[in-house]
Image (cartoon, rainbow, N blue to C red; front, top):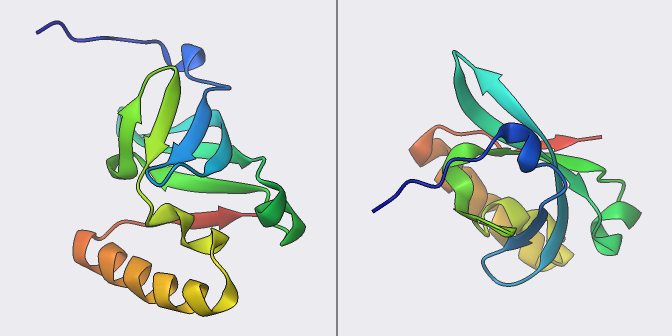
Length: 109
């Protein structure tokens, strides 16, 4: 099985979707730590999130499910999209996931 290697510069502007099929935005940049990719900066283009003042997200690399012409990310990142009631539930789930895996999901403003 051949490994598909891409330059980081080729990943920018890739469309990002959740595993549930919601469009989130575009890849803006990679975050490198200790010569490894820690995560990805996503520019939020979803109108619902933009209205709430969310301009971007930092998504840990572990939450990327697929990288190709489009990217698929774990729905744990997308908990900010849901309604207020669902948001509280999703936030608790996301917190549990983050605590278990010791990863961060940061909102960029």
